[in-house]
Length: 294
Image (cartoon, rainbow, N blue to C red; front, side, top):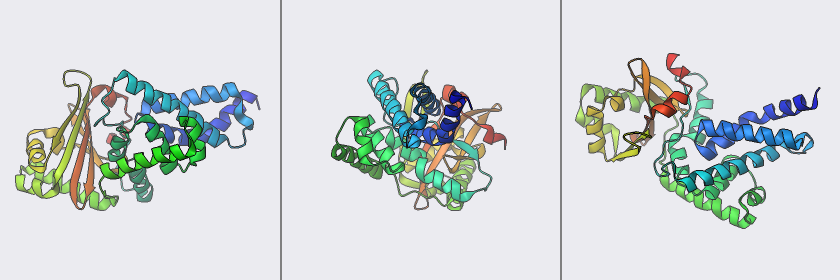
């Protein structure tokens, strides 16, 4: 086999893992693909095919690339860190492979990714690599230019932020669907009291419009405010096509035959605690929304 073809074959074995690392680091599917492509370029130039632990070597390479991208993003201030909604992963809500979907919900739910957006780049890297991919602190330390003890502290700070910023969410898809059904029924019937019953008193709605006239993220807090919004904003109460958004039941709002928003619902203790809506037309156009035709 040609040496370059052999390198490519070795790399493809690990592409899915590398994309998973990059997505959790960056919250952007496009940037994750860019990071993986850059890792391939470095891999092909370094001729690293004989590395003993190629998966570990490539993970380190991708992590360094993502860290640079996060630092560059923060320094440019091109994107709001607080409340930014990451790119969602849309799959068909057809009831197949529930165990796999539950694992996806646990690992890359949008609520978790939104909290990760608030972490400093080094904290995010240490938390993601250690808590999500079980990388030892000794291997994380040189990536962030710290000691293993300092890397442990970075991950610990990230972990505290994540635990404080995410609810005890439902991963039972059947129960999640029941709550979403109740929310949608109350919205469509205009039943304000029924909406209040399905919403957590401290529910938060984030709508990410992206660039343009309504740049950035608009946030609404509180059950009464959110219920009123659901009754006046059709995209909130009428999700259109039901899909899985990062492994949990959500929807795609359709207008004129085109998707105008992706809605993700976080459920805890039988009530909706968060609704995250991506309404940025530029980012929506880049998403794989084939599941809405399923």
